[in-house]
Structure formats: C-alpha cells, structure tokens
Amino acid sequence: MRNEVKVGMLPNGLRFYSQYDWSGGTNLAGIGIKAGAIHAPPGCVGLPHLVEHLLARESLKYPPDEVDFIFEKFLGDPDDDINIRIDRISTNFGFGDLLRRKDMLICLDVMAHFLRDKIVTTEGIDVEKAAVHNECYLRGRDVMPVLLDDLFHEIAYKKNPARLRIDGEKKDLKNIKQSQIKSFIDKHYTTGNMFLIVLGPKFEEVKELAKQYFGDCKEKSSPTLDYDNSEDLPSLSLPRIAELARDTGQYHFAIGFYTRNYLSDDTEAIDILARILAMRLRHILRDCNRKFGGGVYRANAHTSRSFIHGLIYVTFATVNSEFAKEAREVVIQEFKKLKEKLVDERELEAMVYRMNTTHMETFKKVPLSLAEMIIEAVCNGDEDLARLHSYRQRLHKVNRKKLLCVANKYFSPNYIQAMVRPAV
Image (cartoon, rainbow, N blue to C red; front, top):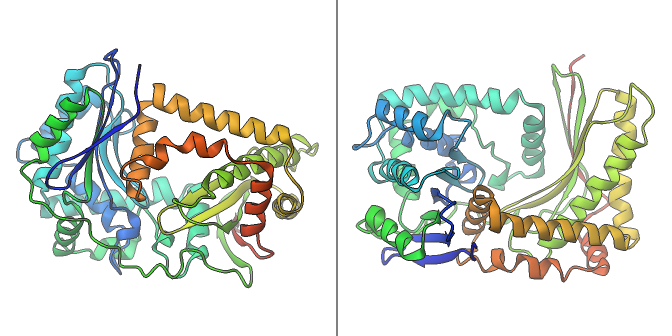
C-alpha cells in the first residue's frame, strides 16, 4: 500500500519527496526546478524552455550519444516515458513509472548528472534554438487549442508574466546569448530552487540518493521573481477581447474571468464550478444540437493558476459562424446562472465524488500524475505539501452556498474573450 508523500530537506536547502510502495511496483523519479516561462528575463521569452533543452543533452559522465542510447533503451522515444518538460512555473527532468528499480536508478543518474554538470556548448545552442523554434509551431502556434490558450493568457494580463508564451518567441529565441543562458542557470538551478522526487523506495533510500547527487552542492536560496504582484487579480471595467485569423476550419473561442491564485481558499469551489460548467455546456452545445452544420464536439472548462495568477474559462470550437455567436451567448449566460441560483444538489454531489475519487486514485495508482501534482504544489509555495494532502478535506467542505458566493465574487459583468477564426 502506498502512503502519503514524505518531505525531507538536506542541510544545503535541497528538498526531496518520497512515497513508499511496499510492492516494489512503483519506480518513478525526477528533479524539479522552480523555474518556468514566467521567469524569463525581459526580451528573452523562451529562455527557460531553451535551457531545458540544453541541459538535457549531455553531462561529463554521459556524452550525447550515450544519452541517446540510454533513453532509447529504458525510456523509448521522446513521447514515451521521458518527462523532461516545462510549463509556466516549473521545469522537470524526469520519466514515467518504470518496470524495474535498477532501470529507474540508471535513468535518475543521467538526469542528476545533467543538473550537476550544467553543460552548455555553442553547438548545443545552435541545435536547440532550431529545435525550440520548430517546437513553437509543431506544439504551439499550429495547434489551435494551444494558440487559443496562449492568446487568452496574453490578453488577460498586461504586466503579469503569466501572459508569456511557454515555448518562446521567435525574435527572442534567435537573439539569446550564451551569457544570458548561463546567467539564468546560475540564478535558478540552485539547491533552494531544485527538488528531487522519487516514488517507490523508502524515505531513507531517497534521502541517500539526494545526498549522493546534491549533498555536496553549495547552498543557495531561491531567487525572487522580478514582478511586483500588482496584476495578480486585475479588475475588468470593460471586456478584454482579442481575435486572430488563421487557416483553420473552425471558430475557436475562450471566454472567462480572473480568480485568485493557487493558494486561495476558493480553489476547490472554482474547480467544482468549472466541472459544472463543462457538463452543462456539453449538454446544451452538443447534445441539444440537431443541425449538421452546428454544434460542437467538446465544450471544456479550465482553471489556470499559479502563485501569481488565476483564471477560469470555457473553450469550444464550431464550424458555423452563426452557431459560434449563439454558443458565445450561451456560455456567458451559464456563467451568469451560477451567480443567480444555487446549483443542483446532484451536480455538486457528482463533481465532489469524482474529484475526490480522482485525487485518491492519483495517490494510490497513478505515480506520474502524482509527481506532477507534487511539482505544482512545490512551485506554488506548498513545499511541505500540506495543501496537497488536505485537498480532499477542503473539497468536502464546499457547499452550494459557497459555490454561489464564489461565482458572484469572480464572474463579473465583463469578461475576457479570445477567438481564433478561419481566415477569409
């Protein structure tokens, strides 16, 4: 049986996280860094992403060709068990749940040496700049849901770095210098800003791994974010609306509002409201449509938050311009209804039951998702995981009146709207 995640810290400030699995069936590890897209210096959008690429190439112990063979042997191609990735607030050098403990230790050794040695070469910079540039399109600008999400965050904020693209900007990437890369690494890849996650072995074994790889590293605290927090929760005196024309066959919409950040007491209520919105809109926009030229495939509701921002928004796509206008009004009205009337008891019960079950399942049998939850918690200020472990207790305290109160707090008459439409 798996237990709660335990937390430890080395004398130099590096934290480590473990969850023991007595069956021996869990073998997952990774090294997280509290540095993501929001930490890019001015004029260097995409620098954190480029650093992630550069540090995953080689180390003094493992040259590039050996890294390639080890990854292919134990982790497969980049879309299999490799979990080297970046988001708005974090970077992770890790991998999925492996079959054998010895394989996990080999792969962890590779990741740890990446971050111990921090090798950056001129050849690597040239190669990875080109790779990141192409990734910006393959997984960003040419993927309509991602493009829409980027546009929504960009228009939602003027100063808040949550508006920055995760993958990067072409003009910035091209001009990033080696000195800027090394400066970013020196600032953010420190003992106070990095943490080790190992799921499967006992706590003492994980502690020894942390000592082995990072115990001799010099203590250095986490850097502060160059942002004054003045736009964590902006006011909406008018709607914020943006539109892009692209070679796409559908009208893609995102409509939503600001909320408080990750540590807010409203977090669970906001999550429940998002799920209720998704269920209601799926019924109205998909199940109630009888016209071949109308309707949607999915109507989703999202929550995006960090320690400096919070958003709740609905997304949908449809091929019909007239239906797009109708659907937009439906979404706005459904947000409004949540302010005016208590939700149905069945809605609340269904959402809480499912969210509670998902949380339990993650701790018991989905180690990769658990690792991501740990990373999110740590990088948003919950370093002892108190909020992560108490999530279910807080979830069960949410009632219908709380949902009504939270809806009235955030769903203002004005809203944020992003649209990507077919080019004429």
